[in-house]
Amino acid sequence: MKKILNLFFASFIIVFILSGCQDRTDLTGPTPSNGKVDFTRLVSLGNSLTAGYQSSALYADAQLYAYDAQIAKEVNANYATPTISYPGIGGLMYIKSIDLSKGTIVIGVNPSTGTPTNTGYKAPYNNLGVPGAILNDILNTTSSTTNPFFNIVLRGLGTEYSQAKALQPTFLTLWIGNNDILGYATSGGTSPYTPSAVFTSLFNTLGDSVASLGCKVAVANIPDVTSIPFFTTVGPVMAMEVPWALFKSMGVPGLIYEKHGETIGTGVADSLALLTGQVLITLPGSNYASLIGQSTGKFYRDNHYPALPVGIDTTKPFGLHPQNPWPDALILDQDEVNTAKTTTTDFNNTIASVVNKYSDRFVLVDINKFFKTVRAADFAGGTVIDGIRFFTTYITGGLFSLDGIHPTGQGQAVVANQFLAAINAKFGSNFPMIDVAAVPGSLILAKRAYEQSQKLPYFEPGTFDHILY
Image (cartoon, rainbow, N blue to C red; front, side, top):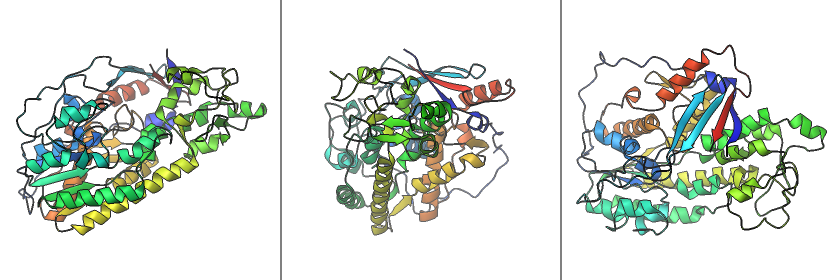
């Protein structure tokens, strides 16, 4: 069944206009120098961000543009990746159609599954990023009965760290910890997160272990997970599209939602709270927003509840009655937003402390600061990189893939350049930046959308519909 929700209004559609790509043919610069960096054996530890996961799947075409793979290409390092044939593993999302004249984007999920293509590689892979990995996994997990990526990447040869050690790296990239808070956030606060004290202990142990390898290390920190499209897309559009004035005339103050541990909803989110991000609706919430006010239990059927929770009455208007509230799993309330932000800050303080401890060999890549800067520029014309105007908005922003969490190929190039810039500044090298415009991204989608937008006289709220199957 189609689930329809208006996701974009005028400012979101118009602002992604493409600028001409910068012509680099006449650019000259200093002769590249490695400085104090040796990329002979580059190894990467991490999770899905390191692996090159995109649009809810891990597949070779995206793995090729993982940030670490792009760095390896830029510095001429041999770099082996556990590639998976198209359409990968995870459920690849794709654009089925886009029609701005009707205001629709249709997103499908490829039902097929790819297979690993180089399992016979004799040594550990250089890219050891495992989608779904948390901090504890780097030192302690060798396989999994529930997550196939551990077995595909690690192949029973040991943990991520032990395999990295076996490769005797001359340079290592480390980006881990995102999933230690992300799962909590994407579940609407219903899944646990790693306590800050536990994270600190684990990351210090990992830092000491990595430092014992004797190589240079670039360590990235964790972006604010609540500012990615997975959380920032649906709520503001609901604020614009749902007829709150009508509901208030019916005596309903706003969206009535479950707080954690409730079934009878006591939370209330008015349009201002949704518009300003005081509460955040997750991207899967787009599947249910059009059902607000209807007598439905679709959420419970879709999520295979054996029976309705005690106190839930689906004959009541969905999202407008305490006995049929907007589900906790689809919303982060103010307390949960604060928990996610505070925990992320704690994690990043720990990461910075470990980097400082080994400041002669470690360099911090402040991805959190960079993406905050990019997000702040969203309503001031975006961020232009190599002639392309990027935003953090869903689909049209160019940085994030269709799952609203993982970067596009161009987004990965942007991340790779943050690594290279930090490495150059720290270790006296001058590796050139990657030409982001030369990397495949969402340019085709953005170009199609932009070309169609020129045929329309103006945009109004509700012009853009997002349809998920």
